[in-house]
Image (cartoon, rainbow, N blue to C red; front, side, top):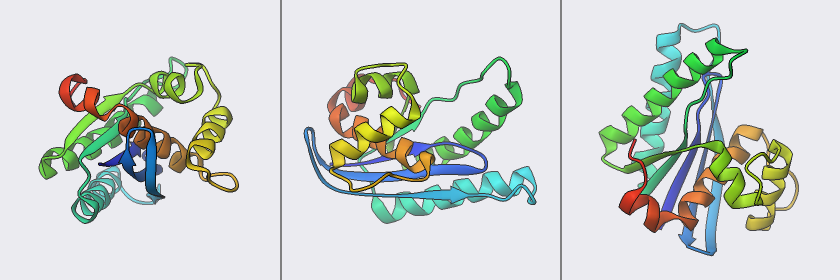
Length: 166
């Protein structure tokens, strides 16, 4: 089973691929798609779409798990740009005909740390421990993408059969 995790962001989108079986990680990798604020919004969204599309074609995952978009009341514009980046990612998944599920970050934190309100640092340490990875996983977007991919690997059957579809 191969699961891709994607942590959307307009400036930085974390992407990770985990392969294995529930309870056993055989391999993993991670990266970040970076876009420049110097470019038009349409260009940045197309870059995210294109790079995710390329990764999907190369890695051919069985499942993609994307962090569900949210909006903080104090920063509504951030929520809008996050939603647009998520839309580009979901469109790439739809065009690739790969199963894709959105998962709330609190569910990822609860599953991997036991605490839905865990900090980013606590989540990164949990991911590092599950992967037996030496040293911090940086940047945070890549660590979050690995967390999403791990959740997808651990819950693949449930997500593929009845999880909320993207």
